[in-house]
Each structure stands twice: as structure tokens, then as C-alpha cells.
Image (cartoon, rainbow, N blue to C red; front, side):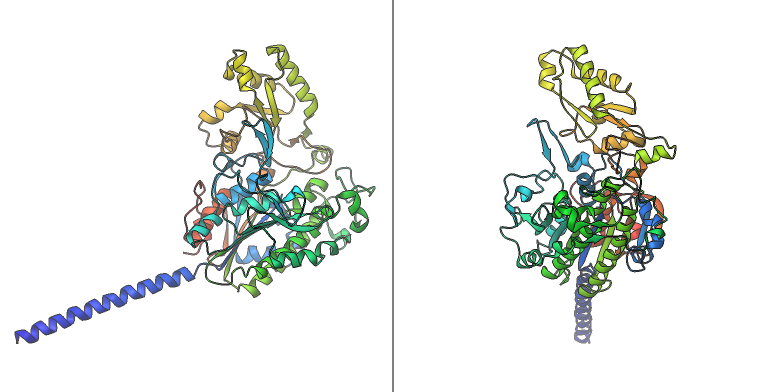
Length: 556
């Protein structure tokens, strides 16, 4: 009897162990299945210089398959803000993908004055690499000035480098900085007389076959044609008159009015570079992005790939024609068609609900101040040469030297610390004296010293934005803030760079696999995008991340 009892107990123990083992095996399989629930492809879209109100202002002109599809079936962050200045292209793209601000990722502008070499540097320049796809120096670029990883880098590490990463933009910096250090490739457009997509030896020694085929297809040349409005220009009631005093236009055409014959204008406007300032630059970018998805088989397996696309023509057109132009409106109507074309291809190639996409912008733009003045809204222009002349005269009178100033750029003043020390001057006293002088000048709203940015603890207002954009090693001694709607720029066209709402408020749309449907008016920040995508992928956040997960956008 005892033997039977022992046998029964033993059998029950063994059966329990097998059951537990089966449960453990099932848990492991469930975990593997959950890994397969990651999107096959993450597509990050940055629309350069897209103000938030472009999404709402032109909404009725959009079709149902582009922007409206993203809004209706995705998650719309309606109060998405930049939390730093300066709001330029390079820091914008970098902040989106690193989840942090220039204070930490180090890209403080498109270019800046290097305090060590005493020279102006470009954010992506790298003379240690060579051009690939062109004999010009346009390909001598890399991400080496970047200090932080991007979420694309973290995905690479998580997948043991098996997930592919590709960056695409007409602009080199907008292709390179989003994908970080470990990308398989970054491609940008070299216009001039070539009209080809190129890269650098940082990524590869020769262009892939699919890129060579694309370049040989003369796709760029096919866009040297008439640019007229997509619809009847009289229906473009969301923008100002076509003929006005606030737009730049192209050399060789007397007025900045439709239509534009690009075939006859290109020689006087940079050759193929003229495409950048038309919607056809966006068309070309979409064409190349689709070729990349096909050529690299992006999203072809369950290991997540990353594709970053930056539409740059919107920025070139905004700078040329301004926020209120019919050219900008037509560009967004056509970009909506590009977004629809891309989504349809992703549905077909990767699969519906097999990819995740977000769309945002690297900065907004100001209404042309001369236009604002015409409608009696406070605005103006800084006379930079006159201001610099007055400032240098002050420095000479007070200190007997003008060479105390090494550089003035990006609304910052860089002082010659060695010269100040040799004259036995106190650096902080000099900085404070400059603040007291500059604050007297017309259109200068605020002035801050480097010390106040390093030692202060600002949590709101323009001071907090400046501090988030201030990199102790790279930024200057003095930071200037202009009055709202005041710029240092031409009297035609729009620009950006400030901490004002027109530059900081940009769209943010999440769409696709793992994304909730809905919207929020609660404030989100561009630095929240990288941790949100990282959380969706269940990977490490970028190593300098300061953003927060937008948890409401992600399916529970």
C-alpha cells in the first residue's frame, strides 16, 4: 500500500513538473510571439518647416488617403512643441530622433563657431571621409559631431545589428543626423549639374545597384517641367494673393507668380537644385524612398527596420515664398498626395498594420514680417550690419579693442577669452557689460550670459528654452533674443529659429501598428517622440534621452 502511495505521489510530482515545464515553454513562446508583434518597419517622416496650422489650414484641400488618413486612424498630438531654441533644421532633426535637446546632443545649429579651432563648422562636415556617387565634396559628410545615440542606433544594438537603418533627404544633415552612428546608409540629393543621390565612405565605398539604377533613370530630369497649381488657383482661398511684395521667386522670372517653367529657369537657379524649391523635390524624395524600401527589402522580415524620410522642399519653398503664399499651399496639397502614395506602397510591400509611422516637423516658420506690417501687426527686421557696427564701437570705446569678439552667429556672441585674460579683464564683468549694452538696442528683447545658462535653473519661459539649447562646450558667451515677429532676414520669404510659438508649434501624428486612435491637446514635446517609439519597440531609450513616453498614443 505504501509503495502504491509513494508511486502515486511520485507520479503526481512528475506530472506537475511536466505541466510547469509546458507552462514555461508556453510563456517563452508567448514572449517570442510578443516580439513578433513589433512593427516590421518604423518610418519617421519630418516635414521641414511645417507649422502646425498647415495641417488645419489646408485640411479641406487634402484627399482622404494622406494627412487625413493619419489623423483619422492615428494619434494626433495637437499641442506638440519644441522645448528649446534655436529652432533650426539640424538640431530639430537630431532632437526628434535622440529624444533630447542641443544641451546634450551637441548639435546647436546647422553650423556654429568652433571655440577650439576658431573656425565656423558645419554640423555634418567630415573631411576624413570621401564622397560616394559624385566627384564633388558634397558627399564629405558624417554624423561625427553628434554626441548622443538615436533610437535607430538603439534598435541596431537591440537587434544585434540585423535591423536595417536608412536615412533619406534632399539635405545631407536631414538624412545623416536622424539615423545616428550605425546606419546602413544615409542618402542625400546633389543637384547642380548632376541631379544624383549620393552618400559618403562613412557608410559604404560604392553605391548599391538600386541607387545607381535610380540615378541613371533620369527621374530628376523628368521633373524639370512646368510647376503650376494642382487645382484652380482661384480656389486657393487659404492663402494670400499670388502677386505681392512679400515673395522671392526665381532668377529669370520677373514676378513670383504661377506658372514656373523649370526647364527654362534651372540654369540660372542652380541647375537641378531648383527642384528643391518646388514640390517636385518632395516627389523625387518619395520616389527614392519607395526605391529604397524595395531595393533594401525594408520591412521584409520580423526584425524591425528603420527608415527616416525628411521632406526638405517645404523649407526651401517657405524661405523663398513665405508662410502665406499660394506656392506653400500648393506644395502641401501635393505633399498630401505624396504621403498617400507612400502609405499605399507600405500597405502593399510591408503590409497593413505591419509598420509604424510618425510625422512631425523640425521647426515652424514666421509670417513674413513685411506682410505682418502691411496688416498692422507688430513685427520688424534687425539691421544686423548697423547693430554690429554700433556694438563694436562700444567695445572699442570701453575696452580699447574690437578683437575681444571672435564671432557673432546664431544670435550668440563668442568672446576671445585669451585676449580678455591678457588685458587682465574679468570675463564675467565683460559679459555683463555687453548685456547692459545690447539690451538698449531696438528689437532686442532679452540678453543672457553663458553663466546664467550654466548656473540657472529655469523651468518655463524663453529662459528654459535657451537653457535646453545651450551646450556649455559649444555655445557662446552671450545669447540674444529678438522681439516677437522680428527677424534678421530678407524682406521677402519666411524664416525660423526663435522660441516663439510660430517656430515651436509643429504637428505630431503617430500611425500604424501599436498606435491608438485618438488625439490630445495636452502638451507634448518633440523630444518625446524617440522614447515613445523606443517604448513601442521595447528597446533601450537613446543614451542621452530626456523626453517622456506619450503613453496615450501606444496600445496597452
